[in-house]
Length: 161
View 1: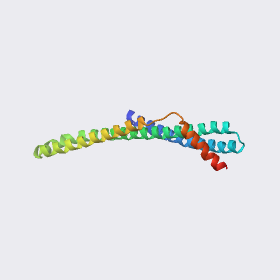
View 2 (view 1 turned 90 degrees about the vertical axis):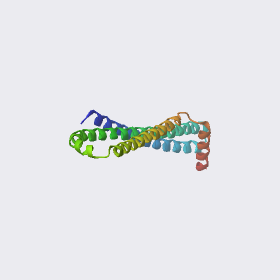
View 3 (view 1 turned 30 degrees about the vertical axis):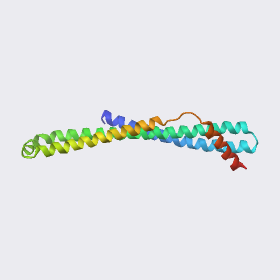
View 4 (view 1 turned 90 degrees about the horizontal axis):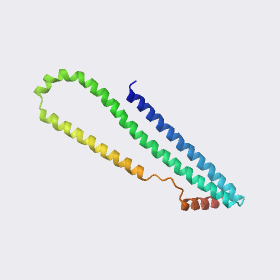
């Protein structure tokens, strides 16, 4: 197993671990919401507020874990492409010698145009991937918005009666 393949395995493992962490945060959020209902039913609004803040924090943390998981998946896909390309390159090296005679009789302008188009499409894909990564990283939020906390408290109070 090459070094790149080891890194690819580690990236895929990290993405799964982040996804599991997101699921765990989702469960914790549900538990906190249940605690909010109990506190509201007992008339303890201060404790309910604390649980609401915890629920919002867990929700945001879970979303962040999912975002990171998606980004690591994207990196793993690019590493997978690199590993595959490396294998293809090695295979092509053996074929190049036998193709020399064939290439002399082929239209080199058409081959060059095709390769230019292929390279352009790869560059376009890289730009789109970079734009998506920039957008995802710019939307990361780590604070607990007070409006969401108040909204969740009201929702839980309505459900609890």
